[in-house]
Image 1 (cartoon, one colour):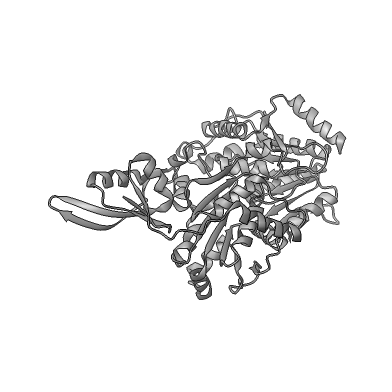
Image 2 (cartoon, one colour):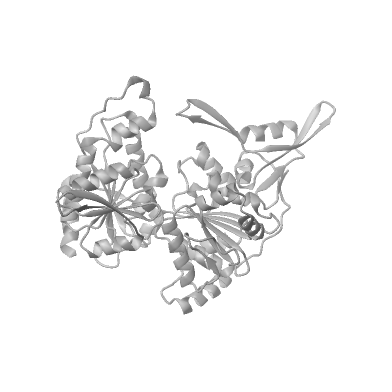
Amino acid sequence: MIYNTRTFWSYVGNESPAMIGQIKELLTRKSYDFDTKTTKITKFYQCINKIQIEDEVYETIRFPTGLIKFITDKFPILVEDTGITPNIYTEQNVLEYANIVHEFNPKFEIRDYQINATLTSLNNFQSLIYASVGSGKTSVMSLVCKILEDDRILIMNGNNFILQQIYDRLVSFNIDSISWNPSKEPDYTKRIVLINTKSSDERLNRQDENYLKFLKEVNTIIWDEAQHLQALTSFEPMFYVDSQKLHHMIGYSGSPFRNYEHPYNDIDDFTLIAIIGEPAFTYEMKDTIGDENIAQPYSYFINYPNKEPWVPDHLKENYFVQYRANITYNKARNRAGIEMLKYLNKNNIKTLASINNIKPGQNLMKTLKEEGVDSIFVCGDNTIYEWVYTKRGKLKLETRTGTTDDIKKAFENAYNIIFGSTVLDEGVDIEEFQAVVLFSAGKTPIAGIQRVGRCSRKKKTGKNISFVIDFKDINGNYMFRNHYEKRKKMMKDSGVINIELVQDFCKMIEELNDLE
């Protein structure tokens, strides 16, 4: 029997030793670490009681509630709900609050799938809301906060740009009891506290009394960009809450899984499901495209003269060394990317150049500047870089503090190219982007889908299309050939239309420029 407690831990007991043994084996996962070349074994259960009757040992184990469906799909085992039955909200409840928000903010109009996502968030203890870019996840989250008007709510994200957007949306829903100021201590007297994941971790590490006291009163935890939830820094706060007071654990993500076809085969995906369960609501990118809620993305893969670089024999199996050689410092690849950015700039296409590494990104910016193209680089901690000429005609890298508003100001000042580190990969709403060039070759769908989303916000004028420009990483190391194939498949599965011929790509770009 499985006892569903509607808390983080559920239990299985009163079963034969053979059945318990099978469940323990199912919840034991192995993962290979390519750096240490060792296999790690993780047990997603704990034995809490043993009773020996004659020659048999009967165990009771506890395991993360998110894995109940995984277990019951494998074994014919009964489930008994022993936890507190949650309040049940109806569509009418959601519409009443949506109308209240609309009266305050006439721009807000709730869509049918957003009603379903809101109900799923409210009517479950755990809910992973898989809703793609452009689906209005932030509006759903804000409406949930509006409806749970008596709850103390913790909202977590690792990106201050996104937390600011969430704060602005909450305010637009006429919610005023919010604590958000990254430069100050949180105000724990407020009903809703927004906190950066890193800041939360620092407070837990030093056992901040005020933060711990607040966590004891939390009724709802919301993780935005929940694909990062498997990291301890993200989910640790839930171990400090009072389980009797915690009503909801909700995660929102536009691309929750690294292995979207078989998530249970990936240890990080498995951990995510353990914490918050399988997606309780799904609205994928192909759905948002079909409903015309985002721009139709087109992909083009740059075919550049690639060859496998030299790497010392003893480092050939080191992924990070190979990545630097094949991707980050690949001269032919970077040159092809520079030429693409120059072409997009010439055609006035507002473009995000997505790159993980700051120093190589700065070098690409410098080359562009030397060849007549202005750009800025937006990084974490609200840092912006820009190459400027001194009075003596030498280039100097200028550093300043800024926000996403600086991107819009750059566009107003005739800049077309914005470099972005991982801080712009997820959740940041800049609707002006019409194209994204993926300098960093992601190996998971999480990075790919999120980066596609940066340029695919619905266009208010002109054609409702966008461009995702990647690199045809063939003829190099086998790992990156595989990653290229996976990215291409991921895009196709997500509703992105691939353009094979460069002349067709150029024709679409130039037609778009003619409409501007």
